[in-house]
Image (cartoon, rainbow, N blue to C red):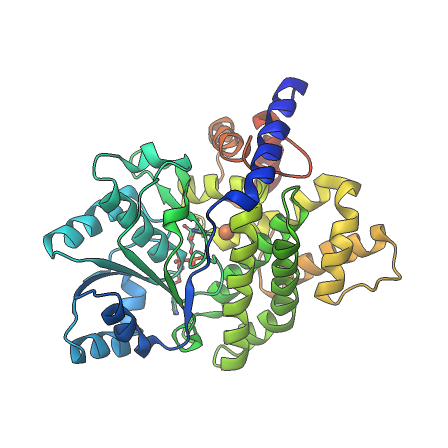
Length: 399
Ligand SMILES: NC(=O)c1ccc[n+]([C@@H]2O[C@H](COP(=O)([O-])OP(=O)(O)OC[C@H]3O[C@@H](n4cnc5c(N)ncnc54)[C@H](O)[C@@H]3O)[C@@H](O)[C@H]2O)c1
Ligand SMILES: [Fe+2]
């Protein structure tokens, strides 16, 4: 990256870091049981709710206890269940039409990050009827209170239940972009592990590694606080302690609950301290080829860590200790390598490879351009790279 752009990025990031204590971050109220949700809605004076989910979650009947409880408590509901992985602008438009036609006053995102993000974007469009999603792309462009927004994560990965982000794909251009603003932070998050037990091993692994990527990218960035560092370390510890267990036995409720908390803590870390180039590149791959988000992150994470080099070794040392793969007596270099090796080993155990076969060479400049514009100047990454430099990751993943 040329020195002028570098200076611009670092100045921008420093300004945001200094403003961090003044920004209106908040965390959602945690609800432990799905069946408690009608009481929350009643307390908030809500009589009609839109539930945004996807077909698989609908088919598995995960919402049944909620729908029963809503019916019993005379709360009207309408379900939008057409959300696709890497949710699109068309999903948001369809769900918004339901919300408006049914006179709803609250939105529940019930599912993985795709359903929760779709619900957030519906809320943003309801709050800002005159603005398209494209116009809200980037940072601080929603700027208006959303209808009551509740997240029920059924994967343990994205942390969307606590973040200020919604990631949406334009269904015409296949450009996937984040919308970041404080009103998108849900008011309530339901962390009930029972809705995650049906998650198949491959999705469990990929979404868990998404949470790991959030914690790692937030921790190694330049914009951390004491709180976000602690959250990231807790998330890494919980993931290394529990992800193999839920991969091998999806019905292990205690480990499922720990993974939900890991994803939540990782979300708390990155919503304030950002992600990095792993996510920027992964978003472009999700948009262009529908690569599952967690999978793209998992494939990329060790490569990006390796290219950052020795400047992140002291931080990786602390992550390695949280992961239980190094001790304080090891050298930074040794511990950093142990951490990267542990991530690679984890990928191998979960059957996650090193390539994304869908990548077409002719798309690379455009996708690297998307990643560059998403990450620079916002993400306080340890080493800055421009679009040309980011291209290397796409070539690496083609091999
Ligand atoms: N807003 C944020 O802060 C944030 C952060 C990271 C990622 N994201 C976005 O979230 C999306 C990915 O979300 P995700 O990884 O949770 O995946 P997802 O929501 O796309 O779900 C993946 C698959 O798992 C299925 N599924 C979900 N829960 C299930 C369950 N309990 N049992 C069985 N199947 C289940 C879904 O039907 C889907 O087929 C991406 O678009 C990504 O960009 C958002
Ligand atoms: Fe992510």
